[in-house]
Image (tube, rainbow, N blue to C red; front, side):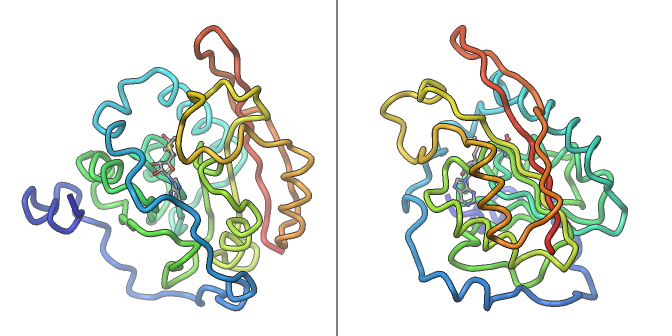
Length: 242
Ligand SMILES: C[S@@+](CC[C@H](N)C(=O)[O-])C[C@H]1O[C@@H](n2cnc3c(N)ncnc32)[C@H](O)[C@@H]1O
């Protein structure tokens, strides 16, 4: 169901945060123009059947708890911050950040996941939902911090994604991205659709971040998670837009 219709039927379960009266700066669309349009996701909602009980699964809840704690330890959150959560999903990581900042823009291409987020009273008034692919259609204003957990492996073109992040950040803006370290293609079912990376190599991702215009690139292990008797490391990389 389209979010607009979902809201019409259920009412504003999460009244979206009041639009900021003052927007500073604009998204650096020149950075995006350097990259030709590309289809970066399937035109279907790959999380449609997973959304309803996503928060009941141990793996995403453990990862989001670990990432949330690591993020809070490494990034100074302030009450005036505008934050984008890329691939926000049901808002598991948003929930760790929203109480400490002005607004979180929950960006995702899954209406089903965002509908779950929208129904969470604890996010009421702090989260604005953006169901759009920012690689194709950027937000209409920049942000101070971009966070993301377990979404990057769903984006085929990592460089394009990092350029889009840079374009959305104010100068000096911060990035905090979490995903799996390189894994032996066992984390997802072998026939999973929309999984483009079986984890990320830290050195390679660091080089790509530098190439996209980021400095102060630091990796940490945010958490470890066990799935089907295998242990997976989840990194958190922080960086600053030069
Ligand atoms: C594994 S879930 C993680 C959700 C949440 N970040 C968490 O940690 O619980 C991955 C999310 O990334 C979203 N996603 C995939 N490709 C995306 C894209 N191009 N832009 C925005 N979100 C995307 C999916 O729809 C899904 O909600």
